[in-house]
Length: 473
Image 1 (spheres, rainbow, N blue to C red):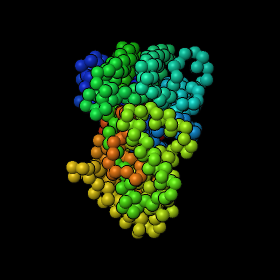
Image 2: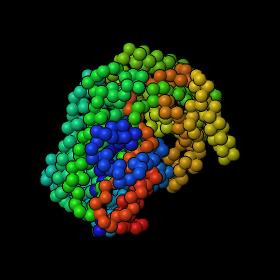
Image 3: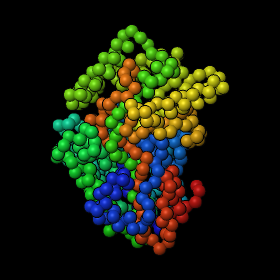
């Protein structure tokens, strides 16, 4: 019976992979096994949402884990809530119940680790928290690198050390992961790397000559390519050490390329249209001062100070999202928190009466389609009712209206400003998530003859279970 080895790489992008193809000796061979390596991620293509769909096969309206990652806000408090929901629903839980031995290392958001038929090792989603494992003594048998999600928010003068440290963690995890695989010989092995996503978020503009904030020749110009080559070598080591009758899958949760450089300030647009009402007085003064201060600091390349100051501010989340300014009782709509300053967004609607609610939903969609840039070009790629995108038992956790902007634009939340402004966060976080994800196959099994890849990441769970000869659980 075939065994499955899965290498998950957060932010592994098929377009970037193809760009570096000639330098990736191992991955280049994988192109020969399938005609396509690109599959579609979830909407939004956020790591929490996407990995939950990969683990469970459920769409975002079913699992309901659609919160956005704010890479500058630090620790979250609901790791156990996510873990409680996922436990028992994942492909490795299903495989374990069918007597397949599993080995799961560093699965994002599946924290803390729970009892499985084999080994599970996981780190916290954000900073703050220890590595957990089942069985616990596995942590004494192997020396592991720091696991889990984003822990670094480097200033410009810290980028060199950040790259060096992240590269070390990647190598370390690849080496110890391979050792555990060879020692344990599981039927299902799943190892996730979260480090590429970090590198791209903070260093994209240093590597992309077409980025408007590319600083010119610099020491980080080839750092993303270097990480792709590193992952190529790690994958090559697993290929060379695959046990007989094994299939290796290389997957990602979403793509990752240049983040938007402009902001579409939807709060201000909706305010002018009369859908959002704001408080006046001192709060209005605070908002105008915030907008002016941030733009001034960004103009003079002092973006690191924006985040230093923000961390000292009370109620900084409300200040950042401008929610403190909104008069909720007199407003009929509000922006949902999907993916932060990225092209993916949603709008919640609050109004009495079913007929009025349905009318307003359609009116908001029409309003979005009428937004043009300075050249008269439409900025909204699409806008739809949530049930036209996904349906499921947790669909009420999705905004009433979902939309996607042109990739040059992100959702801005500032009030009392121009409809379109520069994205002042781009200099700090210049890489952003994309909906193209990766799925690649290495076949070492005589019993495996379906090499067509899934159309989207929602089908990855069933694809894995099919290889293991496991039907619906």
